[in-house]
Image (tube, rainbow, N blue to C red; front, top):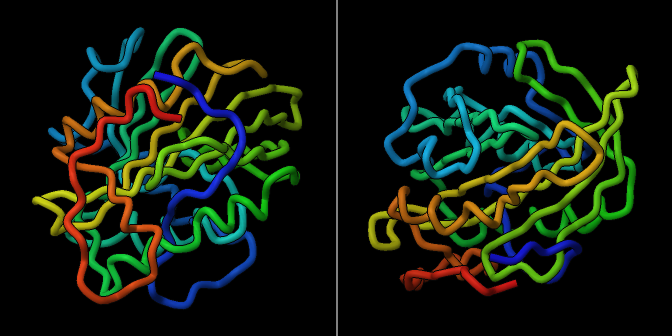
Length: 247
């Protein structure tokens, strides 16, 4: 598995409703993520995350990067959707925290167009100073850092890396990918978000791409290259994709 480090054309996620544009975020409602819930059977297990010692599941997002509409669109219109709201599973490893967010049964009238703008928003944030909010303990701790969009990813993926610094001088390195997927033989659009947050300003030993193939297998999902289109007509059924060696 290879790790990519800047940005190229690829996919993403904005729902077909009008969203408030600039740098919004989940807000106070994210405090609900402090309450654990059952770990989905579709999530990575402890054995699937090398070095992981504990895991716990929470509704919503655990790490928000306030890059334009990326988190606003996911949080308000995907992660809080009912009854199949998304869940983030948090894994503690020796040098980092790993997060897997699963939203596998999205409801949208535009299954292709709903994934149209995350890449654009990430590209527009590339090289700029962005705020990050960590919700692991209820009220968020905020840090800032320069976001670098990730290039060379396969179709249906978007991502970025950044090193953040808090007011107390603490540093973290964040690496994240967004994967547009389908389940139920291409019938249900969804998204899998994989994130690593190291305890220092250096990348964690484990990269999100290292976990993607296993995450797809356990979720019984396939990458959806048609998600980069805005065609709201007939949806093509994607074929299973193995990402090993791509990048």
